[in-house]
Length: 193
Image 1 (cartoon, helix red, strand yellow):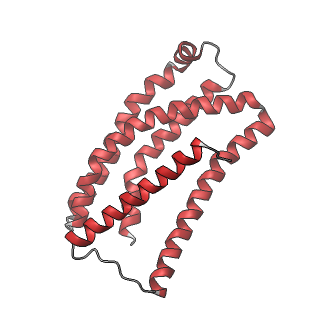
Image 2: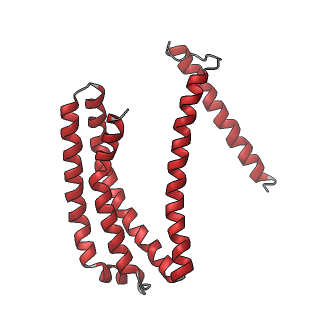
Image 3: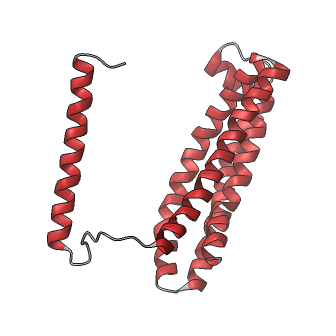
């Protein structure tokens, strides 16, 4: 429970956020003709938004169940050492994947632009090329880590928990596969709309 100065900080933050939202609303409604507030009820629109939100929640629950379920199962059957090893492996994978996501983020505006202008052949070329280059760049980055993971972990951690080397290699292979189909999966989703 918040008391004293913590409550004042929270309340001030809320007031500032509401004020900023109000200013954005005033600016947009005065400068953009398509930005007007209309009060109404559209059952069809509510149904579409609910379906989309339902699938999004379903997908997010699956991801949470997957990640937390693995942690619970590792803890139950293999103990906290295996859970710690997986945690370290996830950190290594996240560091490598951040680099790859930044590379793919550079390509995404061109893919979206070509899709919006109905230049689908160029979009296909970009999607396939970014997936290929992403895979090879990830391979160049992860292959040395997979080969030298034991000395790297000893330098980083000092004492390496059991199972860590195996988990790091598995997580890097999973990341390698994920990079190769990220744009392809996004393209498949858009083409089915």
